[in-house]
Length: 385
Image (spheres, rainbow, N blue to C red):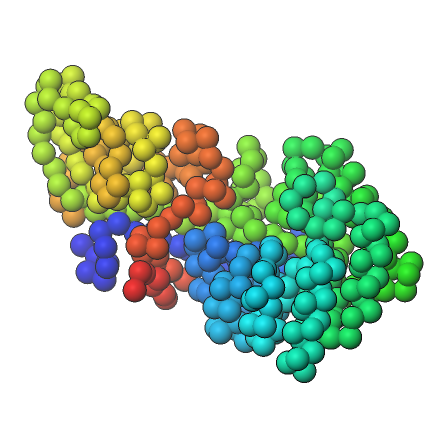
């Protein structure tokens, strides 16, 4: 029994593997290229703060988030780092961003003018990166004469420093021709701006897949996301790139009962036992990132043996057929990770849910505590306060 647990279901994160992944990324990108570590959504729900302590040790100075609240939390912990909000920030939040030296993404002249005005009132210079829509059809200036004129006017604003310009690949693993077209669209637009006499400190378009597959698109900054954590969101395994998966999901057995043949298990009597069945209950469910669509599709590891989940997954619990497996209440069960000779990967679960690894891990509820290990020692705990 692990007496330090705050809940009998938890995530374990191996910071040594995270360190390995950052080093691998640094080793493959073009020399001199900066890394912007993407830690939006609390590093995909894996803990932006504890992970970034490691990446900062390895020389990472730039971080990307999605919202002002994420940026403020990050800057409070690491005031000396550069943080870019990669998405839309409403104008009424510009003041807090400028006060805290947070870099904003801008893609309209109107917002740039509002930012300039607020920065002037605060007697500060606001940093921004221009977003360009090169084919994602999401956010950004659409290259053309109108956008070129607007960008020119942004550069002329007195209280603005245009530090960078970026775009985002839509299919950098699966569609090389479209990826090349996006890169050409992006860099041609940059050239048109630079031909007017304006310069950018940073230019970036490379995401995780691009980092793995396309050195020619590195420019002078790349933005790795999911690959930092040892996942690829593709058919290719992380170990093919020297990456190591770094999380496990575990739980303790909450209850064990013998259910007779013909009796049912769970809501809607979804599972009917065709034999006398040893039913184990685990204290986590769809509120912890295991949606009901996974019911009766996944397996867990109990004492190194694969056991099928049965019945509908509940909000806080799920049941497992452990017939023939020696176990007791309090025993450790692995839902993701290795136990003995067996291993269950997140990609195995995604196969049944139709999800990708990035999406799956961002569904972890904060109430599922995270325990961080480095060099075999527990070094940090994140839990719901």
